[in-house]
Length: 125
Image 1 (tube, rainbow, N blue to C red):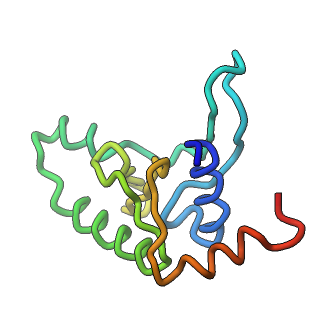
Image 2: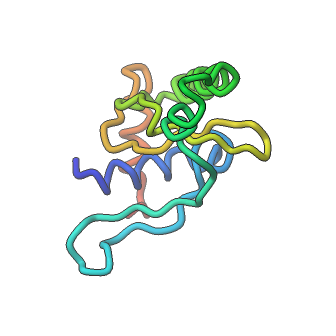
């Protein structure tokens, strides 16, 4: 599965939690030069990697929220596949962590049949 297809599928599957666990999905297609697949999401804040660098690694509150939001994604059947500070975004307004970078995601085994059914649903692109 191509990176763009993964990203688009995850954002579609997790539509109900856009803005809470993941950013809002805005667009998918190619970059301006029609070379690279692109998935564009809302800008929700700063990556935990940047914050960690600026604060010399002190992220206790942010890390607690990151773990909790990742666990919520897992309960929805999505395993991120690239859990790293660069893929966790801190939204200061409500002190939430949203996850990005789903190009290596996997679906929990117990969710696979449900997701296959959703993907093959008539009328879906």
